[in-house]
Image (cartoon, rainbow, N blue to C red):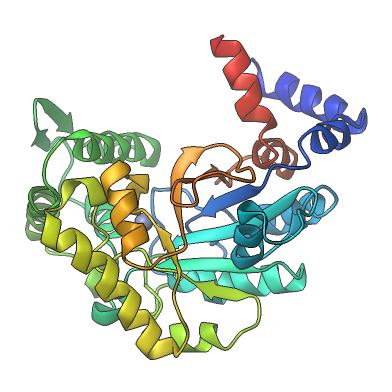
Length: 350
Ligand SMILES: [Zn+2]
């Protein structure tokens, strides 16, 4: 459908009061939103990732509209409701950020604070220790450096050609490369080795790496331990764990699985002097075994990237989420986070 027609359709639905009816029909469902970062090109930086991020304006405008339909609550409150311990508030919604990047605190938090919306940040303790960007940002930076055009990269059975002829084409190459890497059914250590090999090759060819840009770069820098300690003193911010090394739990060995969960938890607790009881699966990857290990490690909840709502009595270790859009209008974002677009795409697929 033409995007203008789509926008007109959404506008008509919006002014007809449809979202109000939809929200009332689904008032007992708890929404959890996923974001990775809030950042835009207007904020000064030496580079801009190809991977899109939610802009400050989109975030701010969408939250202003969403406040009419949602009751934003902390994750602790939501867990209490899901357990049936505390009374259910209609249309409860939790905002979460994966990976614990510096922009979460520096850019997103002031907007959330303005709207009086609590939030959960899920950093990996490995990134906090090293202060280095994640592999996906390292790759994003490396692929943009001159001298890689036309390069063929082998990932499993597929060969991906790096096309630097335009930013859009390059974004396509990056997306194909990332998808192929994530699709491969290999152990997490093989995955990390392969990713590091590809990025290292790019960096050697161009002579540039993400570490050349300032360490306070808001696109890709992780928060520091000092930032985490600061977060732990702020009313409205909850810190959860996202493992030590951003490992995909179903693909790591037994010993590593347990230590990734317990070491990240205890490191966060030690620094924050608070208990860390919430967990987020890196890459959204989970299976029954890893969910059990998360529970045995002492966590009280775990969020996935499975799409949908949560209801009283649901398994707290496989919580579903809706992604907060990285582009488009605030109106479309509102239809997205209320689950309406997901429902409509289900009807279309039949
Ligand atoms: Zn992550």
